[in-house]
Image (cartoon, rainbow, N blue to C red; front, side, top):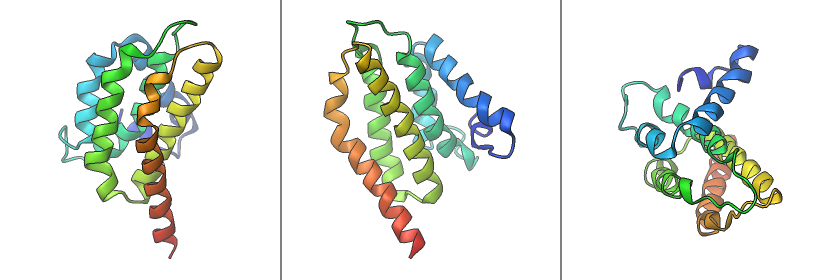
Amino acid sequence: MYKAILITSNKTIVKNIPLCFRLLGRYVIPKSYEKLVIQAIRNELASYYAYTSIGSLKAFGYMFAGSIELLQPGQDLVHVRDTFDSFIKAVKDCVIDSIDIESADFMIESLDTIITELLKKEAEGIDIRMVREYLPDMLNFMLAAQTCYITYRL
């Protein structure tokens, strides 16, 4: 699936693979998928495939969004806290220092998916305060991606 999420030439795949990751996030406990996704982002899982790390980076956003989709007003993000923390640490440790155009695109897409779902949930009355402590890191990730874009264009 990490390879499939990177396919852009087939409209059916482009539409359905992100949905598959959302559904996995919705119906699988974050602790269960965390190990596979975070290890892949860290390039510790099937690192001999070029697509594993970047595919998992893109996939995480959809899985996280799925994990919080069914939350009801008054609930918070406690069940995804450890997984989100692991994601932030993995990106800081393994992605930012070696970011390139491709990984920058997938990181931005993943962050966009996460932030969009968080804002939607906040509007529904979900307590998303847990994410506040990670906002500086998320901003740094976006700035690193922007710097990569600028450097690439020069």
